[in-house]
Image (cartoon, rainbow, N blue to C red; front, side, top):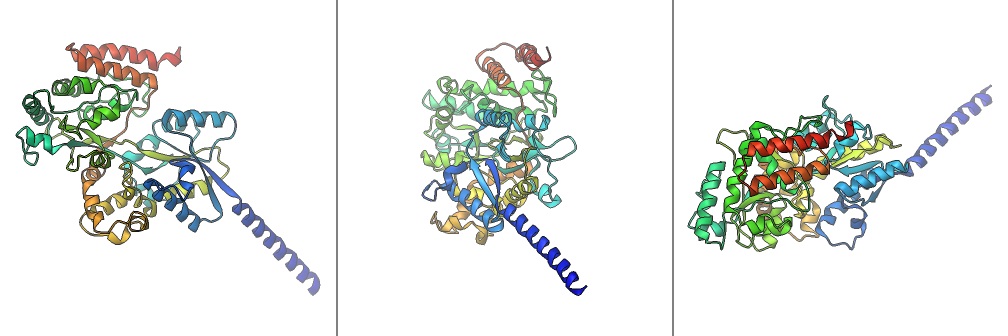
Length: 462
């Protein structure tokens, strides 16, 4: 009996051991396919691009914590190219486990293609809400987490102000009227040599001008469509007329040959060389301006319709990772997303200085504020001092440059662009062009484009 019992115990132990070994073997073979940025390009240790320092540090830290879960990075492009690649992979039955994305993610969420996330409450509450608005349903359930984000601020070239006889330190730029006054003064003084501001007109990127107009439109209380469904256009929202009137006045002190050039990079870079004095700028402008010779370009909060208006902004370059509902590894994929939202990762993204990529969590944004005050220098990522050869003290100045953007992220009502079709983006560009180039009553323009928008958005109903 005793031998029999021992045999039974042995068999049980052996079975359990084999089961554990089998599970371990399976875990060792787990690979998460991730459509992400910058993808496999940064896996090459010889790639000296600064952003790759951050990217490789993310992957290395993940493997330290999860050696049995491999990440297969795939560079599938961005925006329309990425969305097309995803749809093709889904149709072929070979979708990734996780994808990066932005404006198309709500469409995938609606179609049931994304996995809802039951995130740890502390992680969820630490994420700046506006950065996950695209992937939050009406019940507050998340379908993705941001890896990094961006936002807009008001950019000025002080040298143009000084040349025009204005002191940028004391010139009021807090309201629309104040900006119009300063812009007109600079343009009148400039004599066609320099101008008060830059407006980005329609470009070959359909959403570029809309991104820079949207914050001001939202400040009026208007919306482009009924949210969150966004299946009915509201282009003729009467509240938004004031924003179009502001831009129609502002364009009078902007160089026409620049506004309607069509190339985003060319248009916005004119501020750096002193052709224009002010413009709406993304957080990536800091490095861009410095690299273009505008070493004293400055950043302020966006001007408001009135002093009492609630500050509103728009997330831009807001990269979100979501899990495909078809994944065979939902728990491991969720672990990866929680990892991306952790302080370990969020506190690394800004410090390469590439692209003005900002963290998307309150704690990581607070670290930027702390560093600007000379605190938290011990928390800087290792690549700051090793590969980038920067001193901890350099981080104080570096962080200080981003303070206006950090405050915009943490303190304003953050919104997103409407998630509508490319045809709708093109239609809005036509609308914007007519506002800027004609003196036709804005209400008439908006009413006409509202009809056309309804035809586009309801075309699938027929």
